[in-house]
Length: 406
Image (cartoon, rainbow, N blue to C red; front, side, top):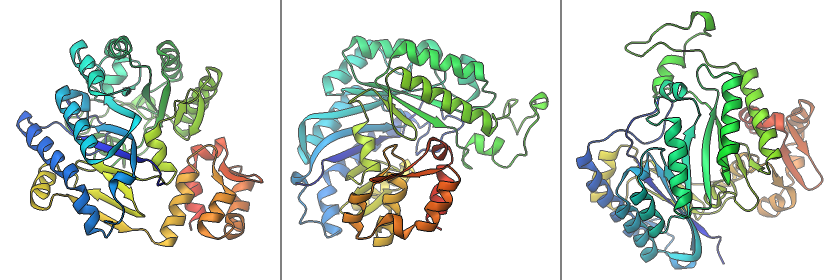
């Protein structure tokens, strides 16, 4: 029996564009919402034809039980709940849905009311992922978020009262001007809220964002002089240095462990049995199919990705019933490399026997020199049954991957 299939559905609409965000999302006119959702439905209905084009018609979708559906964005909670219900129903018509799927909805605090929350639950949503990011109102304004700290607590309570017992929140470490006292306040708020799952990300600076303009190529800024502007951008504060961000990360990991959370991936912590079923598919070579602009898929050893522009996505769907902008049939080498860097994102690392059975060689022998060098640097740990990053290696994972694959 094939591995359970994950479905990702991208809703790109936001009330504001966050200053750090590099996702296929933005603020769009209301008039484009229904055409986009129509195209999305057309893409889902056309997936069987797409797989036939790939030469995968011999793999009927009915053989792949769907055990997770993830609505990401953007802000899926912004659109009318009837559209969430309709898309879930359509997925059930096209695919075989398991008896107890994990159905996740990304939610922005302040974007829902009690009626919409109840409609989400009635539609089949049983897990929410809330982008809280930080618990200081001034910091939220600084990074372009549209919600307040009060919105975070109020929206969380609405879903709890509606019966959602599986909920995740996002935190970002390394935000402009973020101090140790701010981070400690964040950890106290997380403890008060009591989520089942926490995603803690380190701020990344992308070129095509406002933060990319402000911080991307700028020299280090003296905190006492952090009053400059870029164009019509308000005064900026410096980013915390690497040493302070590392302290944030370690403080959080230690505190979450004390509270009973297990760190199962570089950025993710969960109470027992509450790991994100959908996200685990990305890291463990399980199949998933993404729908919507900018969505990616992995199925039958192929990866493909959709056009990121909403307008062009709609046009391509109407013309071809798909909007593929990138497609790759993984070579043996690419498959091996993906298994390495995705497997090392997991705190359990890579099971050596499974890796050898899958690829036909001993990872320890193939990468003997690189592993020895990384081990001496305290970045990796080679155990009798597995190969994994150390806690220090989690902070320098990109450097580890580069060294392994050079």
